[in-house]
Image 1: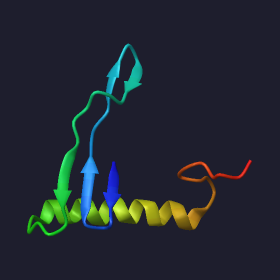
Image 2 (image 1 turned 90 degrees about the horizontal axis):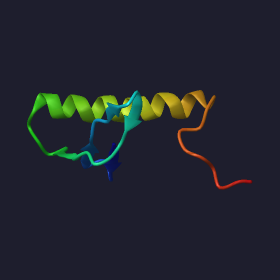
Image 3 (image 1 turned 60 degrees about the horizontal axis):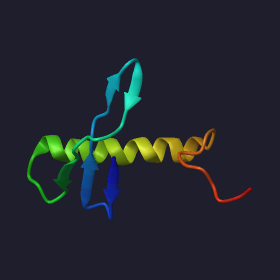
Image 4 (image 1 turned 45 degrees about the horizontal axis):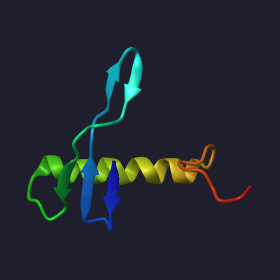
Length: 68
């Protein structure tokens, strides 16, 4: 998924086909932080907490760096 400007969350689920992870074609859910849904609020918190946790660990980058 993707968080956009801490205001929208785009989430999808992957599938498995022939014992391999399939990332496409899967639809995304577009969730807005302005929603009053407690479930959507929880997803925003869980998503940002996950990135914060891994950012602080620094043991393994979440995405590749541009350094060669």
